[in-house]
Amino acid sequence: MALTKTQRRQRIKNRIRKTISGTQSQPRLVVYRSNNEIYAQLINDINGVTIVAASSRDKELSSKKGTKTEVAALVGKLVGEKAIKAGVNEVSFDRGGYLYHGRVKSLAEGARAAGLKF
Image (cartoon, rainbow, N blue to C red; front, side, top):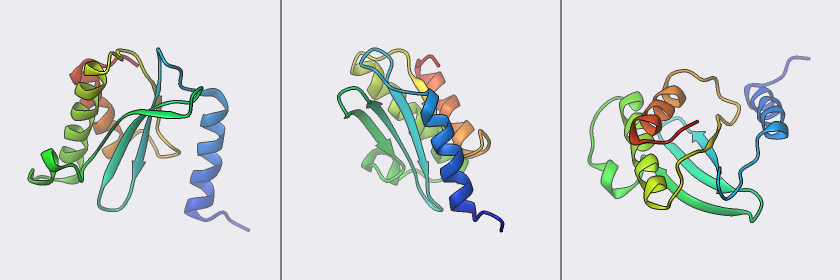
């Protein structure tokens, strides 16, 4: 029996999470992509704390117009700027089971443009 899309993504997500873990000095940059929105968080897995979060629903970005990919780049830039302010320069990228393509790739490039290293 074939896997559904969500089951397949969950398997990939579990496989990624076996190897990637966030620390205080190098937190995990997590991406969640819904049909209309995109969310990003920096997580310290040791303490179980979200350091910084940004999404396409934030007040700064809700007025911006453009394609979903362009908005994802703005979210990446915003989370990168917030991370730099919080004193984080290096992160581990967790694509959350999504392919590194389209909106996920655009978010990552936006975060790199803001100064994050991963």
